[in-house]
Image (cartoon, rainbow, N blue to C red; front, side):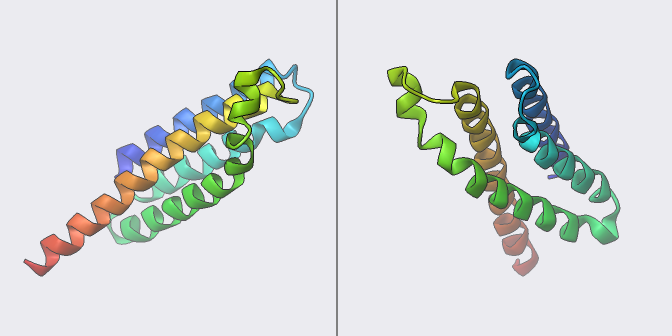
Length: 122
């Protein structure tokens, strides 16, 4: 999960930076995905230490869950984007990409923890 955490963090960070640049650097809120990504990268780096691995990955999954909740509002505006009536299309696109990346990461993380628990039982 360490590599997935760092990789997802890097992807989400790039999404935030690109959204910020694409918006003409007019809104700092476009950097929110980058902040989430940086937190994921930090958690991934911490998880390299065996003693902290489990706690760091749990923290990363919590960050991903908060990120999912935070991006959901803009993801729900995807229909407006496709209809050409979205007020902030860059925000909708960035939020949707962030949502998808975090959702995939969260599913992988939960699956990994389930497998680890089953392995310990066996």
